[in-house]
Image 1 (spheres, rainbow, N blue to C red):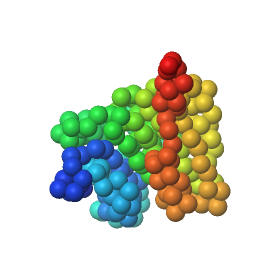
Image 2: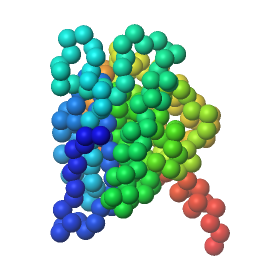
Image 3: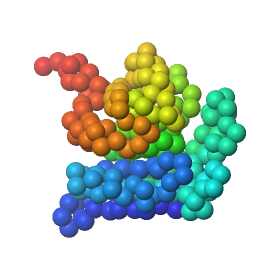
Length: 227
Protein backbone atom coordinates (compact mmCIF):
# COMPACT_ATOMS: atom_id res chain seq x y z
CA UNK A 1 0.00 0.00 0.00
CA UNK A 2 1.42 3.39 -1.02
CA UNK A 3 1.79 5.78 1.91
CA UNK A 4 3.08 9.23 2.71
CA UNK A 5 5.06 9.17 5.95
CA UNK A 6 6.09 12.11 8.10
CA UNK A 7 8.53 11.28 10.88
CA UNK A 8 9.52 13.48 13.81
CA UNK A 9 12.96 15.05 14.06
CA UNK A 10 14.54 12.73 16.64
CA UNK A 11 17.26 15.28 17.37
CA UNK A 12 14.56 17.55 18.79
CA UNK A 13 11.84 15.19 20.00
CA UNK A 14 13.48 11.84 20.65
CA UNK A 15 11.96 8.57 19.41
CA UNK A 16 8.45 8.27 18.01
CA UNK A 17 5.86 8.58 20.78
CA UNK A 18 2.67 8.22 18.74
CA UNK A 19 1.44 7.01 15.37
CA UNK A 20 -1.33 8.92 13.60
CA UNK A 21 -2.87 7.26 10.55
CA UNK A 22 -4.88 9.63 8.35
CA UNK A 23 -7.41 8.12 5.94
CA UNK A 24 -8.73 10.25 3.08
CA UNK A 25 -12.20 10.13 1.62
CA UNK A 26 -13.66 8.74 -1.60
CA UNK A 27 -12.46 10.61 -4.66
CA UNK A 28 -9.46 11.97 -2.81
CA UNK A 29 -5.80 11.19 -2.30
CA UNK A 30 -3.25 11.67 0.50
CA UNK A 31 -2.32 15.19 -0.62
CA UNK A 32 -5.85 16.32 0.30
CA UNK A 33 -4.90 15.92 3.96
CA UNK A 34 -1.74 18.02 3.76
CA UNK A 35 -3.18 20.86 5.84
CA UNK A 36 -4.28 18.35 8.49
CA UNK A 37 -0.77 16.87 8.57
CA UNK A 38 0.70 20.33 9.17
CA UNK A 39 -1.79 21.02 11.98
CA UNK A 40 -1.15 17.69 13.72
CA UNK A 41 2.63 18.12 13.50
CA UNK A 42 2.30 21.46 15.27
CA UNK A 43 0.52 19.87 18.23
CA UNK A 44 2.29 16.49 18.27
CA UNK A 45 5.87 16.99 17.05
CA UNK A 46 6.94 13.58 18.36
CA UNK A 47 4.27 11.72 16.37
CA UNK A 48 4.81 9.79 13.17
CA UNK A 49 2.05 10.58 10.68
CA UNK A 50 1.19 8.10 7.95
CA UNK A 51 -1.26 8.83 5.12
CA UNK A 52 -2.06 5.70 3.08
CA UNK A 53 -3.40 5.98 -0.44
CA UNK A 54 -6.64 4.08 -0.94
CA UNK A 55 -5.96 1.12 -3.24
CA UNK A 56 -8.72 1.55 -5.82
CA UNK A 57 -9.16 4.12 -8.58
CA UNK A 58 -12.27 6.21 -7.94
CA UNK A 59 -15.00 4.80 -10.16
CA UNK A 60 -17.50 7.66 -10.16
CA UNK A 61 -18.54 9.06 -13.53
CA UNK A 62 -16.08 11.69 -14.87
CA UNK A 63 -13.74 11.06 -11.93
CA UNK A 64 -10.23 12.49 -11.82
CA UNK A 65 -8.02 9.57 -12.91
CA UNK A 66 -5.70 10.26 -9.98
CA UNK A 67 -8.45 10.08 -7.35
CA UNK A 68 -8.84 7.02 -5.15
CA UNK A 69 -11.39 5.11 -3.09
CA UNK A 70 -11.27 2.49 -0.35
CA UNK A 71 -14.25 0.67 -1.79
CA UNK A 72 -16.70 1.23 -4.63
CA UNK A 73 -19.91 3.09 -4.01
CA UNK A 74 -21.23 2.34 -7.49
CA UNK A 75 -24.66 0.77 -7.38
CA UNK A 76 -24.37 0.26 -3.64
CA UNK A 77 -27.40 -0.43 -1.48
CA UNK A 78 -27.39 -0.11 2.29
CA UNK A 79 -27.08 -3.87 2.68
CA UNK A 80 -23.96 -3.92 0.46
CA UNK A 81 -21.86 -1.57 2.59
CA UNK A 82 -20.67 -4.03 5.24
CA UNK A 83 -19.39 -6.56 2.70
CA UNK A 84 -17.55 -3.96 0.65
CA UNK A 85 -15.86 -2.51 3.70
CA UNK A 86 -14.96 -5.98 4.98
CA UNK A 87 -13.27 -6.75 1.67
CA UNK A 88 -11.28 -3.51 1.84
CA UNK A 89 -10.10 -3.84 5.46
CA UNK A 90 -7.37 -6.54 5.44
CA UNK A 91 -4.69 -4.57 3.54
CA UNK A 92 -5.25 -1.52 5.75
CA UNK A 93 -5.09 -3.56 8.97
CA UNK A 94 -1.87 -5.18 7.79
CA UNK A 95 -0.36 -1.82 6.87
CA UNK A 96 -1.13 -0.31 10.27
CA UNK A 97 0.28 -3.32 12.14
CA UNK A 98 3.46 -3.24 10.02
CA UNK A 99 3.94 0.47 10.72
CA UNK A 100 3.39 -0.04 14.43
CA UNK A 101 5.98 -2.80 14.52
CA UNK A 102 8.53 -0.84 12.49
CA UNK A 103 8.11 2.34 14.54
CA UNK A 104 7.96 0.54 17.89
CA UNK A 105 4.55 1.83 18.96
CA UNK A 106 1.55 0.02 20.39
CA UNK A 107 -2.13 0.21 19.58
CA UNK A 108 -2.60 2.43 22.63
CA UNK A 109 -0.17 4.89 21.04
CA UNK A 110 -2.01 4.87 17.71
CA UNK A 111 -4.76 7.20 16.50
CA UNK A 112 -6.83 6.60 13.37
CA UNK A 113 -8.22 9.80 11.85
CA UNK A 114 -10.54 9.46 8.87
CA UNK A 115 -12.79 11.51 6.63
CA UNK A 116 -15.80 10.17 4.68
CA UNK A 117 -14.85 6.65 3.48
CA UNK A 118 -11.66 7.00 5.53
CA UNK A 119 -13.79 7.49 8.64
CA UNK A 120 -15.80 4.38 7.80
CA UNK A 121 -12.57 2.42 7.41
CA UNK A 122 -11.21 3.75 10.71
CA UNK A 123 -14.36 2.88 12.65
CA UNK A 124 -14.65 -0.58 11.13
CA UNK A 125 -10.92 -1.28 11.63
CA UNK A 126 -11.24 -0.53 15.33
CA UNK A 127 -14.35 -2.72 15.53
CA UNK A 128 -12.51 -5.58 13.79
CA UNK A 129 -9.34 -5.33 15.90
CA UNK A 130 -9.97 -3.95 19.39
CA UNK A 131 -6.26 -3.52 20.11
CA UNK A 132 -5.49 -1.61 16.93
CA UNK A 133 -5.86 1.97 18.16
CA UNK A 134 -6.32 3.95 21.33
CA UNK A 135 -8.22 6.73 19.56
CA UNK A 136 -10.41 6.92 16.47
CA UNK A 137 -11.48 10.29 15.10
CA UNK A 138 -14.23 9.98 12.48
CA UNK A 139 -15.19 13.05 10.43
CA UNK A 140 -18.36 12.70 8.34
CA UNK A 141 -18.36 8.92 8.61
CA UNK A 142 -20.40 6.02 9.93
CA UNK A 143 -20.19 2.37 10.90
CA UNK A 144 -20.95 -0.09 8.13
CA UNK A 145 -22.65 -2.18 10.83
CA UNK A 146 -23.37 -0.88 14.31
CA UNK A 147 -21.03 -2.65 16.75
CA UNK A 148 -22.20 -5.37 19.10
CA UNK A 149 -19.29 -5.07 21.54
CA UNK A 150 -17.19 -2.19 22.81
CA UNK A 151 -13.47 -1.97 22.16
CA UNK A 152 -12.38 -1.61 25.79
CA UNK A 153 -9.12 0.24 25.10
CA UNK A 154 -10.38 2.53 22.31
CA UNK A 155 -11.99 5.96 22.53
CA UNK A 156 -14.16 6.94 19.55
CA UNK A 157 -14.72 10.57 18.61
CA UNK A 158 -17.56 11.12 16.12
CA UNK A 159 -17.61 14.54 14.42
CA UNK A 160 -20.29 15.34 11.88
CA UNK A 161 -21.93 18.13 9.94
CA UNK A 162 -25.60 18.54 10.67
CA UNK A 163 -26.25 19.46 7.03
CA UNK A 164 -24.20 16.60 5.56
CA UNK A 165 -26.00 15.48 2.37
CA UNK A 166 -23.73 12.48 1.71
CA UNK A 167 -23.64 10.64 5.04
CA UNK A 168 -26.53 12.03 7.02
CA UNK A 169 -25.98 13.07 10.63
CA UNK A 170 -28.53 10.45 11.77
CA UNK A 171 -25.85 7.81 11.18
CA UNK A 172 -23.55 9.49 13.69
CA UNK A 173 -26.40 9.86 16.15
CA UNK A 174 -27.36 6.20 15.79
CA UNK A 175 -23.74 5.13 16.21
CA UNK A 176 -23.35 7.21 19.36
CA UNK A 177 -26.57 5.80 20.83
CA UNK A 178 -25.37 2.24 20.19
CA UNK A 179 -21.92 2.98 21.61
CA UNK A 180 -23.53 4.23 24.81
CA UNK A 181 -25.71 1.10 24.97
CA UNK A 182 -22.66 -1.19 24.85
CA UNK A 183 -20.70 1.01 27.30
CA UNK A 184 -18.13 2.11 24.75
CA UNK A 185 -16.02 5.21 25.35
CA UNK A 186 -17.29 7.68 22.76
CA UNK A 187 -18.07 11.33 22.09
CA UNK A 188 -20.30 12.98 19.50
CA UNK A 189 -19.93 16.55 18.27
CA UNK A 190 -22.15 18.05 15.57
CA UNK A 191 -21.62 21.32 13.69
CA UNK A 192 -25.18 21.89 12.58
CA UNK A 193 -24.38 24.28 9.72
CA UNK A 194 -21.55 22.15 8.28
CA UNK A 195 -21.89 19.78 5.36
CA UNK A 196 -19.76 16.87 4.17
CA UNK A 197 -16.38 18.43 4.84
CA UNK A 198 -13.46 18.74 7.21
CA UNK A 199 -15.11 21.64 9.02
CA UNK A 200 -12.79 24.07 10.84
CA UNK A 201 -14.86 24.05 14.03
CA UNK A 202 -14.99 20.25 14.10
CA UNK A 203 -11.23 20.08 13.47
CA UNK A 204 -10.63 22.41 16.42
CA UNK A 205 -12.92 20.20 18.49
CA UNK A 206 -10.96 17.10 17.47
CA UNK A 207 -7.65 18.70 18.45
CA UNK A 208 -9.09 19.61 21.83
CA UNK A 209 -10.42 16.08 22.37
CA UNK A 210 -7.10 14.49 21.46
CA UNK A 211 -5.31 16.83 23.84
CA UNK A 212 -7.62 16.91 26.83
CA UNK A 213 -10.19 14.08 26.80
CA UNK A 214 -9.34 11.51 29.46
CA UNK A 215 -10.43 8.00 28.37
CA UNK A 216 -13.08 6.45 30.59
CA UNK A 217 -10.91 3.43 31.36
CA UNK A 218 -8.34 5.71 33.02
CA UNK A 219 -11.03 7.37 35.12
CA UNK A 220 -12.31 3.96 36.18
CA UNK A 221 -8.82 2.77 37.07
CA UNK A 222 -8.25 5.91 39.11
CA UNK A 223 -11.58 5.59 40.92
CA UNK A 224 -10.99 1.91 41.69
CA UNK A 225 -7.59 2.52 43.25
CA UNK A 226 -7.60 2.14 47.01
CA UNK A 227 -5.20 4.10 49.11
